[in-house]
Length: 323
Image (cartoon, rainbow, N blue to C red; front, top):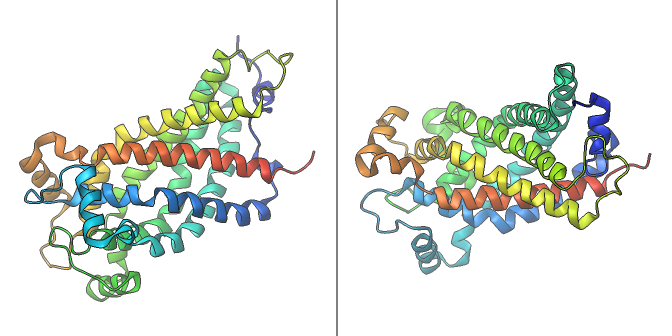
């Protein structure tokens, strides 16, 4: 039997903190610091994934381990953080845009689908999916230029790619050659990659949490049950993050591979189109070529997703206002 929309919200009130219950100023300030730390920890995985995706057939480094070994041999630990300064500069505004759009859209989406009286997991999947996709669309305006510049820095001097003195040098050369639109190369593919990925991630996270809570005996009409412990809440949220990362990475890796190759191409006039990139991947490795970097991407999305969501939920608890 379906419960009312209000009781659905109340059912998970012990484990979720809504946007209207947060101190926004503290949320943004503390969040910037927390997510910067998470980015520092997981950034090397993005470097390895990107190098795997752009490697030509002649490059011997065909596994994540060999890429890491090559980077450490040639550049040491700093090589694992190429482009980090550029990413961290754009990450704060992009994340503020994303989280604000995510939470505000989620509230509206829940209200919009409430009359349909869907099950809690289905309702959560739809509302979170809509919110995740919308948030991604808004944040891409900031994220794509950062992505283009940082990825060129990640692969500079690798597999025949040009070398740069820094992020400003990359941006200047791109604008000189192609204008501002050069910073948005692959924008449509980024939207096609990250928006569905974000939708799949948040939909999986929202619905899997509710399935797990129901399995554990919470939710629905179980108001008499004592509130779950903080450790149990964290474990359920972590499990949801892993499930979400696995789902999203499996769905979107092919588009991410094509997008990455397009974004890191040099400044030559005859840069390949998306269609030509697809043909090259098929010729070199067949269909499995589209899943280059799947291992690092799966690990990145699962590790980043789980770490991010635990950090995010912790941040919300820190910034929750008193009733």
